[in-house]
Image (cartoon, rainbow, N blue to C red; front, side, top):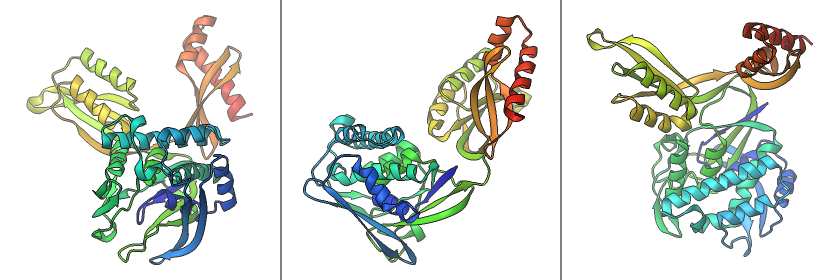
Length: 397
């Protein structure tokens, strides 16, 4: 399993992502072949080896002719992708990136996503950047994507709307939508100009998890930006490799609060709502509060993108006046649920994998319960029989 980590040394843009992919081993012919499936023209790709500061990498430019500079809508791009011969996953993920761009632009302009005029993002290089990035990652066999914090940049950028602050409003909206971490410019450089473009932000906030993986690095590529400032190398690094264990670190948050004035029924209701919204785990711990009052501590584990929703449920559904939130590193084994044929019929079994190998398994409760009722057997006997047969078939064939 190949994982990718994008290190935003000097920013991120669509062109820099493509350059990093090529520098890390993606064939230019394969990239052009994938883009040819879009059945559109008006652009050409040029690449060259270059240096930014002390780094050598690949600088890719999407050259547009008059047709390519024509303005397109988000729906135009999605229609082109949907009509292409690209794989289902490339179509799906590219469409997700375009949807995110449309949503961000709509937030900035106060319009519906389908009604927003894209200005600079409406030219064909946006289509090429997005689809090329998604297809390139697939061709390199990347299954998990991670990203470093984005550099904020500083100063202003000139656009068709006039001068805008850095990061541009659409880019800032994409940061906020993904709850992406933001860092100061390298070396606290001043007046850096735009360091992260809306296209680069849309691609990475859609595809990547913002955490640093533990990987054994096989290849590193550097995608270079157009500018060559003195303060920092205008480059995006791409690290490719396998994660050091089959377990992976998932970016999650731990939300906690202490409650001493709610009944068990009310707390149980809160737990149900949290699980319904997608919490990974919810539990209660008996504690003592001031004046030795017995109380409970409510703990909730959620993915980073669901933090705000979980906090809202806790604040609205409990009597608490505040919650504690902190990042939590969670190491998860790979898991898979499969159905196997047993002497009691088809039963779903959860598999636990490390380094690609099954190391443990257990029957799924609902299937075991159904089988126990159908055969008039004790649930414990069903569990034991299914466990034994599944281990014989999958662990010790």
